[in-house]
Image (cartoon, rainbow, N blue to C red; front, side, top):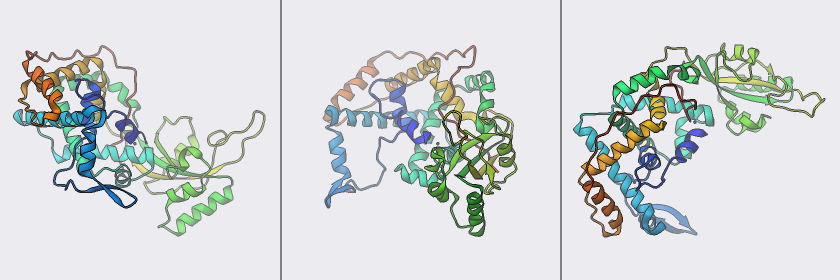
Amino acid sequence: MGRLGGRIEARLCRRALVVGMGALLVWLVGGCGSRQGEPQRQVVARVNGQSITKQELYDFLETVDNGDAARRALDALIVRQLIRQDAEKKSIKVSAEDIEARMEGMRDYVLATTGKDFDAWLSDTGQIRSDLDARLSLQILTSRLVIPDRDRREFFETNKTRLNDLPHNNESVIYRQIVVPSKEEAEAIRKQLAADKSMSFAKLAEEKSLDPMTRSRGGMVGWASKGKMTPPDPELEKVLFSLKAGEISQVLPVPGGVTASAPAGQKAPERWRIVKVEKHIAPHEITLEDNQDVIEEWMLSDPRFQMQLQQFFTNLRAQGKVEIVDARYKLLSEIYEKSQQTPQTTMPPAPLPSEAPRTAPSRRPGRRGG
């Protein structure tokens, strides 16, 4: 889920005055607005004891790139309002259960890719839960406004085989490991953890593990799907799927080349490990309801549906009566006036693809656990 923060942030704040996919995602998954009710005198930084306030930050944004940063933010807020008003007019709502269903998958994704629990990840990335809820709500509303249920169902049926390879649609585990140079040391660490239940497996992994790929994430390896581990490791797979969430394995040998290498002709150094299963994802039927977010992501990444999405926003801007009061945003005002003078066109349905796209999703959290 290090991909969640990095890849979501990579989508943010592109040229929002031009109606395109980059611009649309500014407000769908990014935070360009401020929280209501916070005093603008709030201190956001201090330099040698001298404060910089939120109001000073806002004022500065109005001058960056000749005001483009502020115009992008204002445009994003306007579009957010237009979406919510359109959804209300069409009686389209997002429930707390809808948001929680998406959040459950995000928690798994964060855990599997960063090794951190969700609250710690939010804190590290400077987010709060209410902000994330608002962005998810807006994302769900937009997809429901743009994508007809019939198209969503047909796309799911056409692309169902692609979902077979995603971890959350298989019996899977999310697990950590600690890799050390000897069996004796691995045994000692295991006994230490067994004797002191308050001791952190992740902290010990950061301190002791020899595996550079997982050590910085508290030993987090990520997902392993039953029968689909790469490279295949039958012994490890058997152990992982015999453990319950929270359980730690016996000491296991590390196959040569997994975490250690040696010059050609020389034997790789010996490595041993213990593993801990953080979550067990049970096997279950693949349904559209459990894959709504990944189906939406695939659809809105498809050029044919991008055209439909772009047309939706063109129409939304043209229909809305937007008055820009502040003279500093004259350029934005002119853009909206022009869009409202342009004859509205209908939004044709996007054709369904004849075959599944070949690219994999940028992310897909797991949902079910045990």
